[in-house]
Length: 305
Length: 305
Image (cartoon, rainbow over all chains, first blue to last red; front, side, top):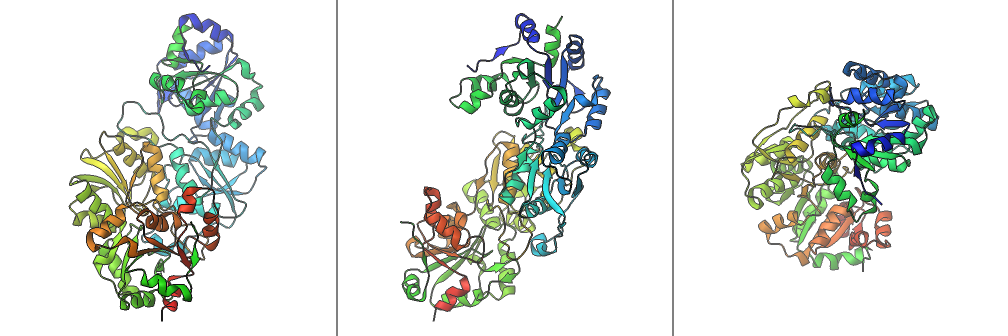
């Protein structure tokens, strides 16, 4: 078990014959920030023309589905809004349909998350900048909290600050409060830069530490993401592949939902990590070994005639 | 082993006869924020008049020794600067004497930490507010880093922000860089408020997560704090007691340095936690059981004739 094969010209026909649906992570698979991965647009077009259904499955909570659609279009991808599953969207689905919640939350997140909350009738407070007053430790009694807040929803928030950790931990101290996080990715995939770009996972841990609570996580590798897809597309897991650049989220989601799995090397993971996991003593690491790997999504397109 | 006794009138003479030095945590033991614990000043005076040496040992990194001295004086405590050991001060000692470091660090911390760094010849950058530009994820290539920075020093910083996590993680990605944190206390002790006040421990975890590094911790329960005390006061561990309100830092420091230990119930811990640790299956939890406990430092004073 747990052997990973490089996807080659010889293997690609058998591989494609075995799937109807291709779930694709976005950051590090289709694009880096605002730049598409070479050949990505072409590969998606080829897969569609072969009758395969591409679906876009991202832990990135910064954008609403409408904003993602704009981003896809701008880069030349042909995509419909229904095909896009981001964690801002699925967090709203979770609150509305899983929890039947319709009150107010403390929201740490982007404009995209605000938009999805509004669309699903969830009231919120807390977004935008929230800077500390000087000597905040001597004036904590003056920190105002919203009496209506029933829980905390945490996604990527570039305004993340000390005051936000304080408010979130205080709300989570209320009896019966809930704590939802979009995802736990520690960093964004970045290539060719000295800057490490912290992801939502780096924002979840301080709130968990300060509140002594664990967040309920929406995104990959949690099954809820795939439940949302199945609700809308009735996909057959045995004829579905998950394509991603991170073993601990993308590939593990595939394993958790009994899908086929394909790793690309344009983001977080590399051959070395895959080989290390393959030879690992740890069952958790062996579980993250993909069925296949390939240099990039563009290389997959090139293998298709 | 691991039985904790309540300090009573009957026990107090034997207890005091067995010690020359009394190490006292500050937050939750001597004061809450700007308010002294009732009887604290009087207790310290009584201990001094009995020939006991009080030393003040705090994980709180917000103040320099000079600033602590002012705080002590304002509340009526009679204290000399040499008797004060805070983590802003000992972090500077660590850099200067343990590491023989004299270059530049990325400093996440307060004015008090700036002061101690300056006093010990450590150059720094990064303090004060550091807010994200909008769309920071699309402009990470424009984030400026200081080429001279050799490591990260993290203490309590009420300006803690997303940009600071990003910069710290980027500096920690440099080969040979070091990562020092003043302490890991997840919260400050607060009484009678709905507001949870995150401590430095809640600021260490996001930087550790984003950088995939572990910080070297200066404060309690690490032995370095006691090494700094011994360097200056030549105390005899067997005739020293550590008094504190947190089992995982104060009491554990005492255990790590073979001191006697006394817990007070005016801060983080309570009788319930002490009893739970005493009956715990976990050796780590049993190790945190203090030798004695008492309601407050003021109650100790009352037991002394």
